Image (cartoon, rainbow, N blue to C red; front, side, top):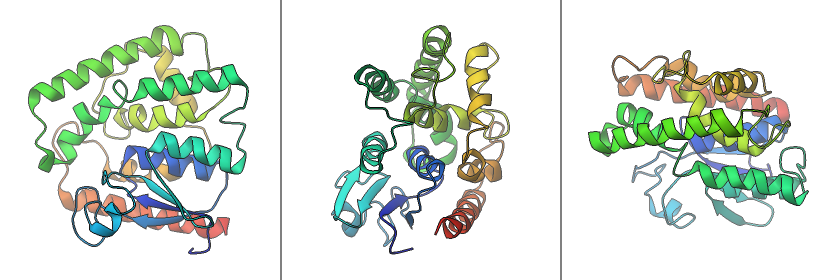
Length: 251
């Protein structure tokens, strides 16, 4: 896969990594996946000097444009770059107002929807982070307020986040919100949000959804007790094998 135009560094369990993976699979664009374990200082870790030389923040995902050598981190910046790089106007249009609505969501996401992971998933998966209970409660409250905003505004009269057409805003949103639902981690009750639930069901039919979410389907329900590390590793391994098979078909 070394001749592919884009090299993606990360791990399938990462929500932002899945957003970038989904966009590229949706666009049927092959890429090289390089495993980087978040928080590790080992050779394949995000705190290893060779990775920090690419992304000093030590976060995932990072991409490398093989042709130019250009390196870029942060999922939303990566997705907008890829759309411009490959001309994916279907999910990131050039119309100023349409693009601005997408950008609006992408900025809103960071301290609102992103708290889905901080408050509900990371404490069960990443015990090493030692996230205080007060921080978890605050993050869950922030997420609930954000979902209320999606329910009454963003998705009240729209099929998708920024309008009636799928966009990168939906990929970014779903990897956070969708991971919480029944069938995956099952750690949040969406019954008060019918518009959000309809959007979740609609997103589950988008090309690439099942391929990108193998890791969550394999991990399963974590609402009762945290999964053992072996289960997390096995879920990531299966997701990587599945991704490798898909990328081989894309050539």
